[in-house]
Image 1 (tube, helix red, strand yellow):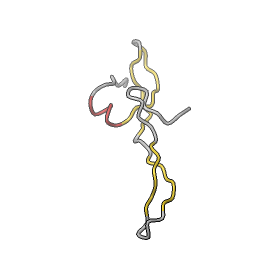
Image 2 (spheres, one colour):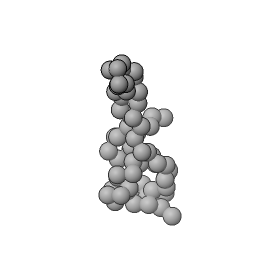
Image 3 (cartoon, helix red, strand yellow):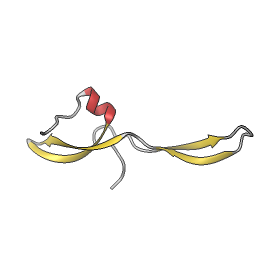
Image 4 (spheres, one colour):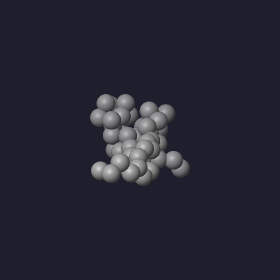
Length: 63
């Protein structure tokens, strides 16, 4: 399974670390993806959601 938010699709970004001498090496920035139980179609289900979607209230938590 991919490391993606099931609500907004946020995942990993790639780019380069740049040193003082301007050398570039590949690196990844990982999205802050959390596993949690949420109500999906009236039933609790484990989903992967980014913290921005959790804070914005785009998901209904199942306790």
